[in-house]
Image 1 (cartoon, rainbow, N blue to C red):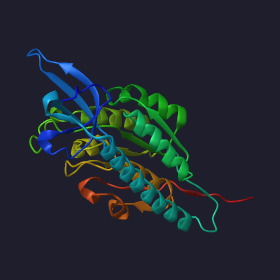
Image 2 (image 1 turned 90 degrees about the vertical axis):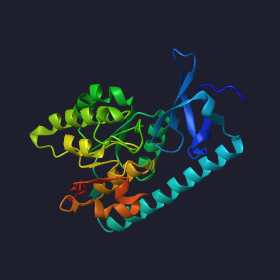
Image 3 (image 1 turned 180 degrees about the horizontal axis):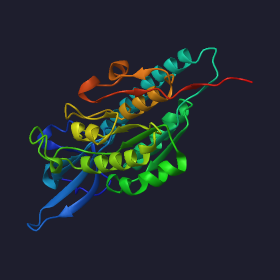
Length: 274
């Protein structure tokens, strides 16, 4: 068997290799076993596994999975563009400004390309989940966005149990702390709209901290595009309209099982020419 190393794309044998992961790092335990810390290749989940349970995936299969991922993104972008074009016909508009904090470097780069292809003003920063709370206030002060996205990777340590134990989630507590810090900045009535969370995140606690939308009510894997779709819809909806999850759920891969929330006012302004 090929030795597993950092950067390899692998699957967990005991799970039928259902999800492709990138090996983020390898940790040696006291018992001389090796544990791999994994990040989803095409979904926002973080996990760990004994090295013995991992298998390097063939390049052909990886290429096929990545192509399916890219095709899905293109399909979703086309839907978003169609919505934007229909909504702005005959109008001069100013869409809401987005600040997006992402714990994954590749996903942050891909998110920025998606926002640009949609013609949206977005600042995307690659900041590790556990460090986002340190930077969120200064970034809000600097960019003064209308919409804040806080995301990266997450996952439950004991899947399907202890939903109310914050320590059963890999990164949810960091998302919660960042949302709370953002709301402290927002206490002067700036009306910031916040999306926060990743795969299997502690939805109720993130909403309780002050997010408008969050993942994941069903403790399921969310799609890469889900946070972007929420941000895009808020940014391009007229400021006089209230956006609910029912306005967005049909565009999300798994609907309200993956993302839900209390809703928010749109951030698009009609520009009056003098």
